[in-house]
Image 1 (cartoon, rainbow, N blue to C red):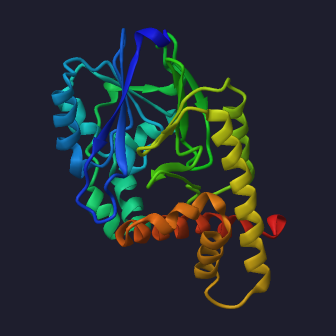
Image 2: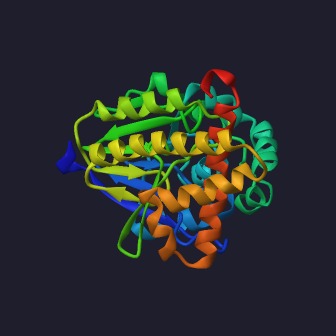
Image 3: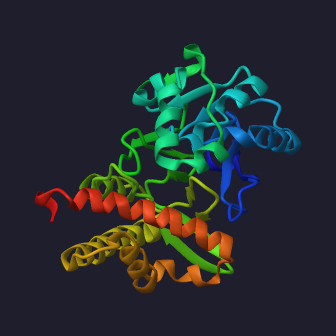
Amino acid sequence: MTDSVSFDLIPIEQDIPGFAPFFGAWLCEGPVNLVVDVGPARTAGRLTASLRAHGLTRLDYILLTHIHIDHCGALAALLEAYPSAKVICHAKGIPFLVNPDKLWKGSLAVLGKLAEHYGPPGPIRPEVLIAHTDSAIEGLTIAETPGHAVHHLSFLYGGRMFAGEAAGNYFRISGRDYLRPATPPRFFLDVCLQSVDRLLSFEDQPICYAHCGSNEHSRYWLTAFRHQLLLWAELIQAELRRGGEDVLARCVDELLSNDPNLAAFESMDPPTQARERTFTANAVKGFLGYFSDDVHA
């Protein structure tokens, strides 16, 4: 299977400062042609044009790691370009793809102007949607990996692991590794750790992240991510115990100063640093919500 499948990251250019690069779709070509995640609605035309330029004339399946609008937004447009394609996603996500109004309103509430940059997702015809429990693609393993989202999936195909954001976000910045949790509210640390352990149970293989990063060794980086989650829990709990004001901002500063996996932050240009501060703060909010329950304090 591995020898008969080729893999390419198809970048999806954005017009948002600090978001170049940030989004990409993973293209797997072989006996079955797959795309994993499709990026925001606003840049659907760019994804379609890139796939056409790549020479993709047939698309069999689109796999969604989760239905956040920056990962599923371009779905309606891509299905227009490749009308024979089917979509595999978590069963819980199907109603929100058929009628995306609630998904869009929730995205606006959480992301604000960033959601407007991404654009609203269009409705998807029910007949093209396949629940993850009903998938029957030869050689495809689907792992339920909640943590980033309750409807999050990871895919193993052709000797590669497509971990979505269950393994955090990984980038190479000026030749340096950068790994950041993606733990927005509502977040449950124990559930997230269980998902990481589930991915660690598979053999070591190249790992492809949901945005635009990849690495050759899944187990090394999954282990690093597991340690990172526990470090964040320790540092954030310490700030909570200190009390006082500006806990969120203090947590972000503390993490940027003391998490070695974030050290490449200093090598980023100012717009990219602003992006990462925003997403780091959102990830911290997930931890703060988790620890606000006395059971976890």
